[in-house]
Length: 260
Ligand code: ZN
Image (tube, protein in one colour):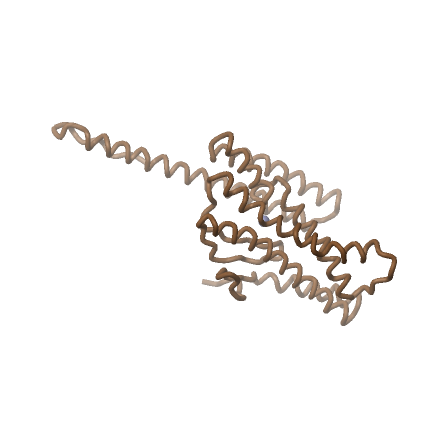
């Protein structure tokens, strides 16, 4: 099978994978850097991308390491140009568990914002001149990037972190399936609104593509939960009929098999 990702290395036993399309992002960043500031611009831009995705990995590790505390296996973290994805073998249905696993990601970003805050404030609001391609301006950019990453992920668009938090809160009031239904429905409506805003108001076509992807991912996840729910209802019914059959009079005709 053709694989579209390459294995980098393992962190805390979790395989880090890089999607092949990353090469395009690096080439684009290098080109933009070269255009703006020749050699130093190119190196600075590439460093920014590498450090930014280092922060994405830390965000995903926040989710992954918290998930492990609930016995969830995390075989890999995939890095795509649009962000990271930790592959959890299951998502706990206990609302408090889903809530903590989800919050841990953006929480990492806000801790990084706090660490980078002095440099960020000095670069953007200080009196002295900070050279464009310096480490200080690199860290200041990372500070802003982490603030955006943390905030963006908290938008209540399921299955983004904010949407998962919303689902976890809803599922304390109703069934898991209904909570997922409402979270994904509201997420889809918001995804369309944000995609239109990104495309026509903020002139960010790539961001609107990202929201289309999120719309699709939310729909997929709702269907997955629905299928799981139907399967478990089917097996419960089978088990109930089997119990009944065992209790029944051996002279009576057997219970007809269930039609799925
Ligand atoms: Zn996240």
